[in-house]
Image 1 (cartoon, rainbow, N blue to C red):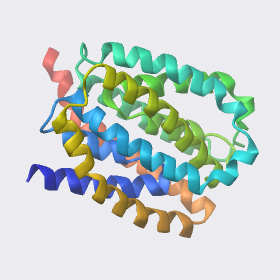
Image 2 (image 1 turned 90 degrees about the vertical axis):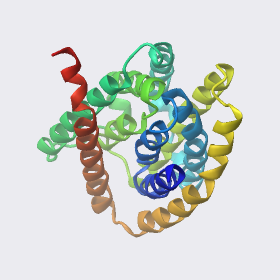
Image 3 (image 1 turned 90 degrees about the horizontal axis):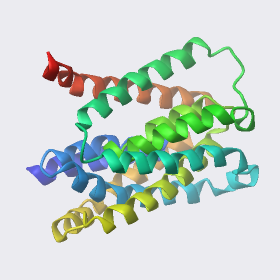
Length: 251
């Protein structure tokens, strides 16, 4: 029964990731963490997350011609955030970070909707926002294994095509996940059981990814970004609802 729940979460999450670039870790990490420790869950999910990110980057690689230079401040800041996140991973109740992530995302989505008529900035025109969002994305990866929502929120606020959006998001995920995997491996997170579980989720991951890819190709630009924002809001609300109880620990 445990594996069935994990497989369902992996299938649905992978489909969502193929559409909007995120969703897999959000669903699969908590599912694995129900039965294994959080560091193990992050380790198990990081490898298929990186593989699906590689696939997303490959199928949108034509966007590389538009350049990645404007996003370097974001990526550099995310490394610093990842170091901070991995440092506090074993010292902090992850429910706090998930609750904060949910509240932050809701605020970001509402702000973007309220300013929807305002022209979006080009990435090179907002380096400070890139640094702040990169730092936060790295922290979220290190503590709860969920950086993609922050990256997606950052990118949807910029003037990008859906292809460039998914390419930059996926490339960022590949780089961050690679660093996280090396760090987790050095810490001994990849036990025999963790590796076996990681291999087992491969089938539902790629089945869901295939279906999601079809939907991505079908959605027009405007409908695509509206779908991404709606998914962000739904997942943010679920994070808040699932972790709200942590506030009562101090009451």
